Each structure stands twice: as structure tokens, then as C-alpha cells.
Length: 433
Image 1 (cartoon, helix red, strand yellow):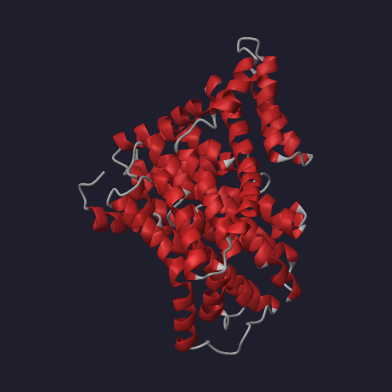
Image 2 (image 1 turned 180 degrees about the vertical axis):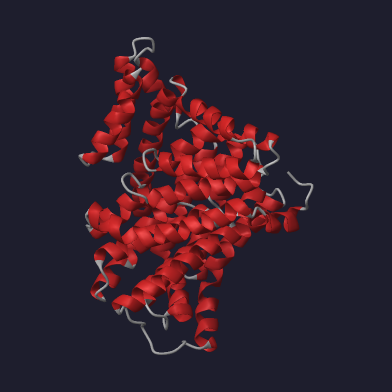
């Protein structure tokens, strides 16, 4: 019936009139409960609240807090200095630094949203001062934040591993090469655009190995954090969720004792900032949970999945079709919600067709995170655009070449599983699952 689609249509209308994304999703979900008399209204509240009752989601506030501590402790600035030494001589240096910094930070913040906000605040204004287009600055800061969804630790991979019962350690290691490929694709596109527009380098030549070595030494404590996390998870010292709490403690110790730039008196302010950032993310997840109930009740995802499977039993063709579906859904549904809804639907089907669940997890998270910079509802798009005060139409034009490059990487990851699997197979062995 056409009435079944009212919540989805209402959500798109609310997006179109620039309603805040969390409220748009929540209002759309509420409309389903008001229209469909078969479901008690109190279920809406229960679904909103129950979304917070998740052990893996504890990683979100911990890693957001770790990112805030890094900014306050000057860890981010040390990584920025390293990025400057590495690529400051390249055309479009500030934008190239943005991608390199995001790659270095990806293993620290675990949150694409946190990275998008940080990059837009730190490098966005500097790019505008250097006569970069504000829309271009918003696009490169949001697209670079995608890397955080792949380079460990990644909140998306934690959620997928929990739902699909897949080794989070293998997922973490499997995301490294795809994350680096995304970074390389963004840097290539940046170079061509910067060359065409005259976005200049910061210096005429490479900074030299002595400066690189010096900035690397200054950043070594920060760079050790993702290694510390991977080793700890690999050898069972702590779980991925516990890694978030341990990372907070580790960053505090680095800031206080190694860099001596963090004061205990700074922590209350950092905690307040983290609470506000986490609340906005969790409100979106709560709204997505209620909207996900509507989708599940109307059996919309299973119908889509059944339809796709009816088209082909070939695993490669099915993966390509799923990618198309995810790209479409990702432009209308928040990535975490889509991840939660679609993982239990697709994983059993693909496992029966002998698709490695680690491979599919990387493809799924990559796809849905790319959707995070895709109009009209990309979360990172909203964050960077809001910080840079960029209209959506300007952002949409600037993001197209970057989307094209990232979709090429997504296609390669889909067609060639070993891009994802060779590193976790080397670390864990072929028989590990």
C-alpha cells in the first residue's frame, strides 16, 4: 500500500526543508506509529531508548573522548606537523595535508564524524585563507574523514563484527589497505583539481628526511596508539570496546607525561565537549533505531534482499547489485542504521555463496561511509558544511569527482577480495575466522 511509504517520503521532505537529520528521522519514524494502529505508540519510545543499550556502542564515547583529548594535548598538531613535512611541497598542499592527517588520525579517533569536525575546524579555515574554495575545503575534510571508518579502530567495523559474529581483529586489519587506497584516490583527485585551480604548495621542495624524522619522532607516541590497540586485540589483552577505554587512559598518559601539554584541569572541559558530541551521535542512532523498526515491520529490507537474490546467484554479480542498493539507501538512511538493519540480512546469504564475511564487511562499511559524504543526508557532509558554512548545492558540485574516485576504489574492493583479505590472512592465518 502507498501508506507504507509515508514515513520514507516524509523523511525525504523533512530533509529537503533542512530539518536537522536526527529530528527528521525521528519524526518520520513517529509518523509510522501514528498511522499504523497495529503497533502501540510506546514501542516508539522503547526503540529510541533501547538503541543505547548496546555494549559495542560504548566504544563511541570512549573514542570520541580520546579524540578530544588528543586535540587538547596537542597530539593532533604533532601529526599535522608530520603531514606538513611529508606533503607540504605538493600542489594543493593544505588539502593533501588534510588527507594525510586523516590517515594518521584514522587509527586514533575511530569516528568519521569526529574526524570530519576536527579537520573542518583545524584545516578548513586555513584553506579558505589560502584562497581555496570553501566548498572544496568542506568536501576534502568530509571525504578524508571516511578513512577513519576503515583504518582501525573503526566503530562501524566494531558494530558489523558484533552483529555478523565476525572477528573484529580481522576486520580491523582488513581495513588498513582499503583505507590507504581511499587516501591515495583522494590525493590524486586533489592534485588534479589543485593543479587546475592554482592551489599552491607551502614550499617549493620536499622538506627533507631530517625534518621528516624529527616530526616523526615528535609524533611517535601518537602513532603508537593504533599499534597498541591492534596488538592488544590480536592477543586477547582487551576487547574492541575495552580498547576505547584503554585508549582514553593511554592518550591521557601521553598528553600528561610524554608531551606534558595536557593538564588534569583541562579534563572537565574535554568531558563536556565529548558529552555534547556523543549526545548528537547517539540521538541520531536512537532515531535510526526507531526508523529501522518501521523498515523491519514493513519488511522493506528483506523484500529488497529477496529481490536481489532472485536476480542472480553469482556472488560477484550479487555483491555489485548490493553495492548499488547500498549507495541508494545510503543517500537516504544514516549509515549506522543501514549497517544495523542490513548486516543480518545479507551476511547469511553471502556466506552461503562463499563470500568471506570479512571481505563483505569492509565493502559494506566502505559503501555506507561513502554515503556519509553523499547528498542529501550524508552525516560528514552536514558536519563539514556546517563548520564551513557551505550551501548544499555548492558542496554537491564539488564532491562529484571525489565520489567518482572513491567508487572506483569500492569497485576494486568488491571485485578483488584479496585486496582486503591478504593482510588479515597473513596476520591471523587462512583458517582463522
